[in-house]
Amino acid sequence: MPYKRFFPLALALAAAGCGQAGGDGAPGPGAGMPPPEVTVVTVQPKPLAVSFEYVGQTAGSREAEVRSRVQGILVSRNFAEGEAVRKGQSLYTIDPAPFEAAVERAAAELAAAEARHGQAARDAARLKPLLADRAISQKEHDDAVSAEAIAAAEVKAARARLAEARLNLGYTRVEAPISGLASRSLVSEGSLVPGPAQLLTTVVDVDPIWVNFGIPDNEQARIQKEVEAGRLVLPKNGAFEVEVRLGDGSIVARKGRLAFADVRISPATGTREARAELANPDGRLRPGQFVRVVLKGAVIPDAVTVPQRAVLENPQGGGKLVFVVDEKGSAQPRPVEAGPWAGGEWVITSGLKGGERVIVEGVLKLAPGAPVRVAGDKGAANAARKPAAK
Image (cartoon, rainbow, N blue to C red; front, side, top):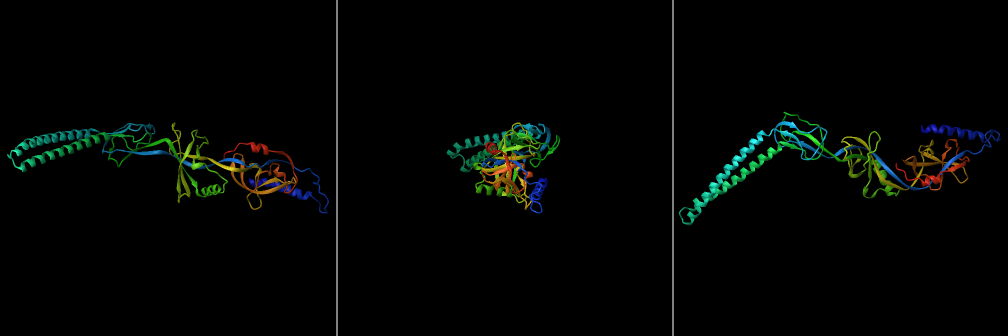
């Protein structure tokens, strides 16, 4: 497409060459025609807000696996798949009957241990005055004291077993470890759950939600070079504002922030991994979505911009060029280096300076060095225009 714009230009050059003079030096039939009328814009450097856009994928800010801590038969599932659950909400119920029996058994063992301890304590108390009267030996008294201590230890062990039994009974109620969206259930009622080895489901926290994306290494190097040269200013401490665009082009109303940027470059993708975070109370964003991540907050301090229609492809050696009106009122081609787009304009990184007049309308009928008549100057409007985002 860009080269089609040069067919009229080439014809104009050929016509200009044929019309300047005949073979004997006489004026050609095109001589004496008035110079073409063009519209120009006067270049005015100005601060320009720019943004950077990348492909990203959403992910939950927290993702917890739901597992049973005890083995048993699953008797019920207590949540709807894909729906929101609260922290502590019951998600599954393991058959509690065997664990209730274990609690009763542990309670009985504790009662027996406490009875033995009481008997041993009474025996030791009766023998203590007898030792003072030398009615029993020291060994008999020491055996009674040791029996009391052993009985006391057995009581502690029995209490620990009862606490463990009660804990396992509580584990038959499998609860959500965090609040979020419940995923698909991987087990059904009647299944034998072997314990922590079996994943039951997953709960994902989507408020806030994360958006993971990668910054290409070559772009990172280019940005760093522009910053070091003073041609680009990034927000302080990397505090970019993040805008998220969905696959249909719509923009998520809530803005986010850049939460993490890795110092390493991934050898697999050649990108620097980064992560944005934004509020998602309505759950509009779901984990796994592909989105566009737009980082805002960078500024080009003295940006030179021209309308896109003023920039042509350079037929000699590639690159781009524009036509400027020199002091003599002639149209001169000027090779330029174009950076990113900013709204409806090109950012020109080199080749132009402030005050120069760039032709924006009438470009296709120009010949290099030909005189032109300037019909209008859009420089004032260009200078008053607000900085445009990329």
